Length: 440
Image 1: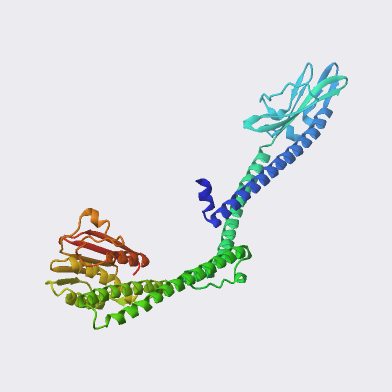
Image 2: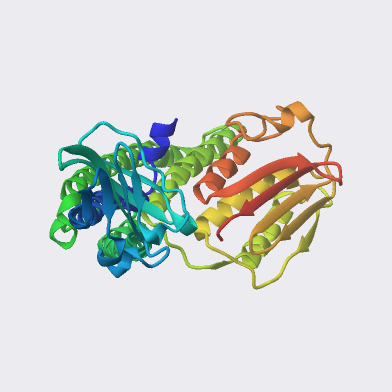
């Protein structure tokens, strides 16, 4: 599940995350290396000074009359000032000497048998001291000299470096993020012409994708897309041609049949029945040819729908003149739909024909820019029949004339125009058909 989500996510998002993680990793490594080097260099510098201080302290230590003597006044003012940050201590087997700068502070002298040792400890006023402890031999005796220096200023300098590095890192990340986001957007904008061409693409047409107008990285994708579209176009053309051939082939014997129906000696009742069925077959053929035209021509001009309804109302009033049929219309005269004119007549004609066929006396028609509702006051259908009405060939009443194709054709046309078709029980007793267009 996670892998599928990552594969289908935004390329720009994944690239920016990868860039951010890589930059953070590189900058973190650089920070660690530089901080480690800075600490090592600063510590080595302080230890070098402490080694020089050890030599200075050792020179002022004198063994005389079986005792060690330390001339602190001549060693330097830095060791005389209290809490100066520079301190020393000397341990002999019998004596210990401390720099006046320590005052009464008990400097921790770490016991050790090593010749040289470095450690950290606290000094006066919480100073952080770096201590260098070295074992010496002087005048035949073993002694240990401790020299210490407050390295808080160096630590503060390192902290300032860390803060400055963090700030520069943040600015670098934001700058690079913005730069790469702009570069990626600029690169993806080069695919906008492809989006425009695909949006304007219509089924059955070719698409000329010039690979030199797009980034090299998508050339293979464009070639595969163009090949697939070309195959689709050829298949569509072959399908249209086959359907057209079949339809026109059927029209020829139908025309001959119509000519035979003009024979005077033909039984009138048989003639009427054959003529009605032949016309129905011809209508079905025209219906299929019309779907082909729609698949090839996908752009329509707004069609005023009120005149279509008025025309069909007059036609069905004559067709069902045997019943006292009344039409109740509710809609604005300027309402337009983006439908082919023949499709509009087919759609409304089937719905009104079905309503007139079952209505007792009244057909209700309500229409707007995005909605059509047709109801009748007929006997209605059961809940089970309601779900079967749009099935091709289904007839709620076999005694009524028809072939069970009207509502199935309406459903097919509604799908073509991305409209939602719903069938419900009407408050007037019959059927309520609602057609909602999402983008008319």
